[in-house]
Length: 274
Image (cartoon, rainbow, N blue to C red; front, side, top):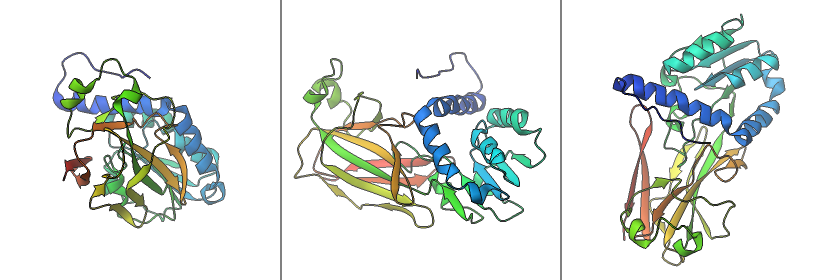
């Protein structure tokens, strides 16, 4: 999908909110991602039928509507973006057993115990968007969909990519910078893989203190997301294009990556140690 960009001048807060709103279009246009979420949700049809369902970051409400179709007793569609909230109100407001909530997910407290929580708070680097929210919920759902993930990396050689624009002199300017979609590759490369970070609902984020790649060959690092549920990979950046591949030139043998909550999203600190 082509990037959606606002071209006229707007007040910053409105520009930022509309940019986030447009991002939902890219999320829903990722058909593979949508199929994976729907397939996982269907496995919990018994828990949803007659139960209470929460969709956090509900966007346009597609999975909230799915929960209704599966017989949910009550659905909370929670969305803080004002423009997505307007869409939700228009699409879901007619259902008597749906409550559309305009609120930050960290401040949302349902009136009942929650049977199933649906979300997509993954970033391309796993924790660089909003998984922090799920680690700090003011309530405990019985089921979370999806409930895990991994950030992985591999090493490639620039010459094997075959890009005519980004050559060594261009890449030199990007040392220490993580760049999304710098290169496009059509299939998962056959490289030695490292797990950089893991996340599981109820256990939180675990990040390696440092990642040593000294014995591996390649001058280009590739990072990618694996979304997991119940310990199994259900989608990755190679199949679900909503999450871009992330690249950076190799500048050493040991690096670290850290995540810190910035109030809206988690920020990423990346550093070569040696």
